[in-house]
Image (tube, rainbow over all chains, first blue to last red; front, top):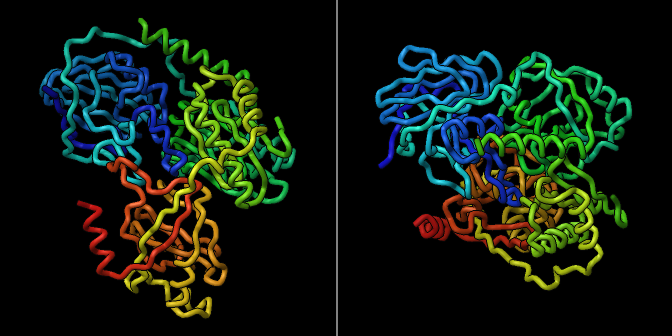
Length: 311
Length: 232
């Protein structure tokens, strides 16, 4: 037995994502997965799912969903007004849903992407080991595409769940100017010292050209020593490329596997979910930390998540 | 960390980039594939995946399972060892290509630019063996080396919005195949009926880095029958 939900409207850009599709980058296949993997895991915790279960990633403007069976859901990540049968429901708390209930999610108030988890998960086939949608190549997720009005999607049959909440210290606080921690990039030495100083001491704004693939920033141009082009080379989530015009581009979940621009820095892993919540007009300042510090932060976050899931 | 001009550096907090050189040569690219092969064989716990490129190998790892220095040391040891590439067989993949006008809509432009006839272009294009240096750009896109420079031709001034999957093209001194429908500015000279990328097939990708490719000219009837056979 399975349950089902119906998207009366799909919202601006709603897609199914999990923690990503690893193992195929050597074939040119991007990893994809949630832009904010941290909030996705919080949402999964609230409904008793495994950490890596797929959720709906809801971008900027939420969908309207009719539940065709009983279930438990939760919403984490970007702050969006959510209403079930006309009544506001809280974020970061599990919500019991009865057959026939209608969830309406409005426009984002803070952040960019909310994650809607369903107890037991979304029932779709895994493609190359993941349920994540890679929109450009129409791979994975629901028919390889974003959710459209009228889509019917199978969900797990759910039993009654205990109500859970996320302890507030684990929640992200949205700020108007965000500090993003970075490590020096692999082509750091191809930039002028002046360029590196510009990068660290300036404020950069997320431009309108931002999507799941990457964010173009606007701000003071960064000076190279001898041009911006390199032989195409592997890039990772959070790689910060600087093309000839000098304004940085941060590579995100759907980034191409290789790129031909110099990389001045890399966003540290624990700050990638924060980047995933940025939208056009948001401002960031970069701060350099060491590899040891960055890996300590990974350990700390992992410890927090392991503790949460063992509650 | 350096080892005989080989640069080993962190690429973020969960990856290492091993750079073997600064130019696109078969020799440097072979060192990339050799290290990829040797680390693959060791099945090191904590390596998530590896991405070979022209001159470097990106190694993604889980810092909770293996340390940067620990992995760096293993890499240094493997680099010192003799190459194992001689022990593995290089695959030769034959790609049937129909250079029929409808598919090779830019053959005339390439002919005009190179001063060669369409027949000569097809003959030259299909007589080389091409090394797959790496994949990237789109899923399954092979960066090929070894094209005869006589058929080199600049990209189109205005890129096309939709190039069908399987299209074979030329851009400057490179040739390649579009695995999925995508926009692009390459001069199209033909099309293969093979799916280079099929997420529902057991072998999702037809080619991998290190393979040799060869283009085999076919006619329109053969193109159609291979297409039907493949999509059964």
